[in-house]
Image (tube, rainbow, N blue to C red; front, side):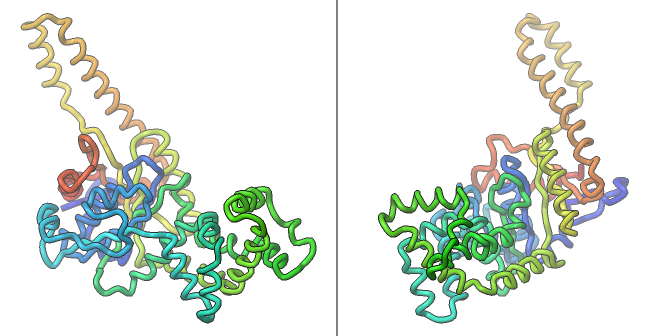
Length: 387
């Protein structure tokens, strides 16, 4: 059974049953820590425990789709075949499906739902600049992931949703996406441009340099009249999303509800540890906390005594110069273990992270590239000692 350190740190308590009793498990962490691999592994582990799981990702690189062996370009939910489930050690009633988010399609669906009538919907969706504008809406991809996730909460096919959050400069950018998207749709720049579309004066004074660059770029693509077309579109969006702040509030409440669990993924290097501290502080400021800390890609320790004895014996039998590379490799590994221990101690200076249940996952040779490696990591997750 997978265990995690208790608050005291002197004993171990199982955490998987309580974690998988939530409705949603959200994986957060900076880029390069193996967040997608951990999300996939948690999904497999939950399915092995008998849960019907949806692994949902917005990662544009498609790594989760690759590791679980499904198509990247299908926006619908793809259930894994019986053969793949068997390869991963998943038996009924457990099941695993994969959802690959298409942010633009989700935005289209959101506009269709929010529009007061079909005419307003059609005017926006058919607008020649809508596709371009959707690429520039701040927080669009992250917000669309939240929209898609909330749509699945009422889907009785799934007991648990594991969300692999998108790669961002800061891991908590994902949680602020609704506010950023709302600002993009209802902010002063949009309102000013909307007023310009209705013939207002002085509205263009609100346009920032960034928006101006976007407009110039769109002008090259769409030709003359771009500004007029853009302001008309923004006016339509402003009308459609007039009560958007209330929707953002409801989404924020959902993501802070007890049915959501947060798994913070990190590695034992200074950059990842610093980012984990930032995430922990940001969660605390939002009156939230991580439910599990996963320290990923940990190098396993080696018993130095028999290793030293073996090296000594080899030196007596062969030319010592031929052992230089082996000695360097051993020394490098020992220094790495020491560095990891120091980094872990630094990581756990944060009180919330120190008290958080945590598990150490080993590095997988060659990375998690497919079902075989994913199954190995799931085996390790189920049996890994706490850090």
